[in-house]
Image 1 (cartoon, helix red, strand yellow):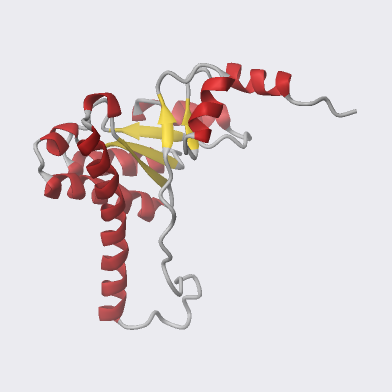
Image 2: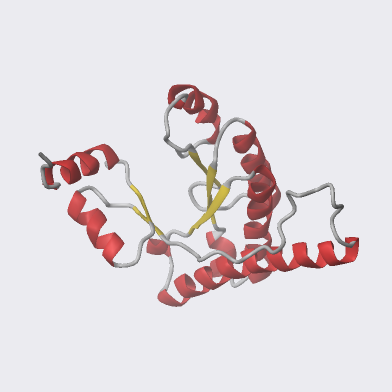
Length: 190
């Protein structure tokens, strides 16, 4: 969904369903400040979102303001971590040069890595967690960075091409049609 205002309605409609609720913040060009994106994120999670797709600040990336891009990513990643939600970073590739696409990937990874390092540093300064807190992780292992393909994926073949190209997730408004095509092509089990 593209607007956080619909999260409560979607949560109600999906109640009892295994479908995860994902919300986009900073849509469409990521021009909001990191603080606003973090607020949008926290509100969406409180209201039921379990995944957040944040739009990176295209303007900051294009003007090479990497400090702002990193603050932007870290603000949303931290809000997601606090709310136990999955965070993903969107950058509108049609608006970027190849060099900017590469840098956006690097900054997305860097924003997450720096947050993990900060957490480790804070844990070291604060001392070990109390023994009564078994929920504290022994280590915060870095996760593999995934890639979500979206835009123009209208058929099963489109989705397969994106997955073969390396996508780990697909975002498509034609998802029902794509799943119907996949079901129709699956070998019948008897």
